[in-house]
Length: 243
Length: 243
DNA sequence: CCATCTTTGTGCACGCGTTCACAAAGACAT
DNA sequence: ATGTCTTTGTGAACGCGTGCACAAAGATGG
Ligand SMILES: NC(=O)c1ccc[n+]([C@@H]2O[C@H](COP(=O)([O-])OP(=O)(O)OC[C@H]3O[C@@H](n4cnc5c(N)ncnc54)[C@H](O)[C@@H]3O)[C@@H](O)[C@H]2O)c1
Ligand SMILES: NC(=O)c1ccc[n+]([C@@H]2O[C@H](COP(=O)([O-])OP(=O)(O)OC[C@H]3O[C@@H](n4cnc5c(N)ncnc54)[C@H](O)[C@@H]3O)[C@@H](O)[C@H]2O)c1
Image (tube, rainbow over all chains, first blue to last red; front, side, top):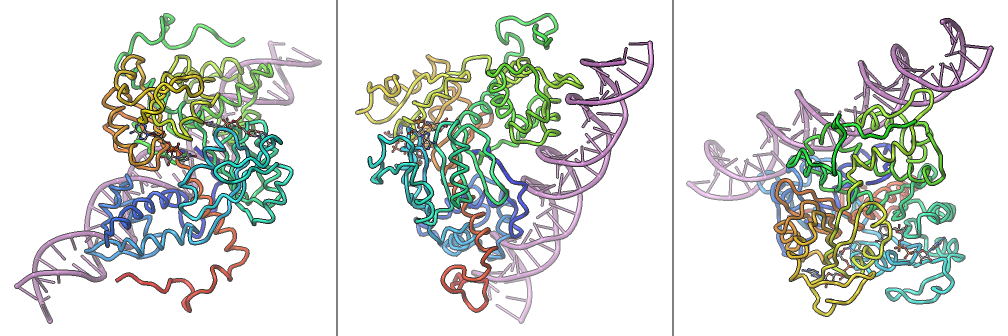
């Protein structure tokens, strides 16, 4: 989840539900594992278990792509890998830029799983002049003055933002103006973009807070009393009230 | 989702819908910003705009927490910050361990936003003996032999996994056995956990693939022809068919 | 004290996503 | 060729999430 995300109301893309699209990469990963072990076919039940979903859901998901299974047998692994890859647009090469090469940006640049599936780090961009030219993960960092030129020259349509929160919106605006139409945002800010531009966000802080909510609930169930220190006599409302 | 995310069917926690819980951190962030600028009250319309959601949705979300607004005026910022913090369990301190201090783990350890909201990095754990004792972000890395002891001594209930994919499930099993009941997983694997344990995942690769899907769709709309190189005569099915 | 104006809280309808359950399809053996 | 057995593909029901639209609440001014 990343879990969290700035969905667009999503005018049902070519009939494939958004929820299904979000699961296709999961299936693809499981299938790739099977493919590497030279497993020829797999049933919906097996594959669903590997992907951690309900088998009926998986079959319905695949039904949106077409009828690629064989009743009584299952699905051809290689064929399915190809179909899903094609559907996700992974048969082509996607040049990606990462903006903001700090702790996180550098980790992303070093991430191997990036290149493994059609994505190629076309450039690393940072505003710090001291970083310009310095190689990170074998790629020299370029100054953000060059941003527009880099986007244009490489035909980049996907940008990753790993700058501090304050810089995220301005960077986003420049990326969009330069032609980027998909953005993955790691900065803890709500990005505003024009129609036609997709934004997805990854927010560690939000994920942790959601976990904390459930964690607190679990703790509260086991020991319904003894919450924090001591409670007011009403047992529900806090002592402080707004003016 | 994150995300993407391994939701449990979620036995509606205390009446608060999961979708609402996932938005509370968003509201909290916007409110914190207002609070720092000493804004006393805010209307649902304004706050919704700041959080990037529909105002009716925001009001309904808040209605699950209680009636904390004043008609004709709006919501008291400070009071709302307190209520949401309390609801999310952020009034208490959550010790967190990070397992796998590589590129990503180190970046997470260095992440300031971690400590800013009730979360405290209690320990960094890695299997590499060469890393033991070496400080990262001011905290000495401990060897994974100590994992169980660290969890117990610090009363840790939230764990972050940033190991390679292959190590994630074993690490997860040890965390759970040691008493961890909430896990944030950065490794690209489906984790299997017993009931009562929450798992949320953050998966860069999946996010990019979802973006690629929409990107391909956008490209296909503008130039319906001229997809990849040349197509088969049927124009839809690929040339290869399964055995 | 009353009128007006703003903004909340929510009833309601709608659409999406999930899951069950089963008929139909096809493999395989005889 | 026929029957059996496995597994897909999907119709249908249900529940959750979203957003509209409005009545009720309360502030504010006269
Ligand atoms: N580190 C993490 O684990 C983590 C986790 C979650 C979220 N985040 C978020 O990701 C972002 C980056 O985190 P970080 O730890 O890498 O921070 P960082 O300070 O280490 O790196 C930020 C980098 O962005 C560069 N930068 C600043 N303004 C820029 C601009 N206008 N254009 C281009 N580059 C610019 C800086 O020079 C710096 O190199 C932050 O918003 C942070 O909140 C980080
Ligand atoms: N770097 C990224 O930006 C990024 C992005 C998305 C996902 N991921 C995923 O996050 C994980 C970590 O990525 P990374 O780039 O930091 O990898 P890395 O190789 O730099 O770091 C992995 C660390 O885990 C440690 N480790 C290995 N086995 C362990 C075990 N059993 N117990 C404890 N520690 C163990 C290793 O010693 C190493 O320090 C990977 O699964 C990767 O796929 C990384």
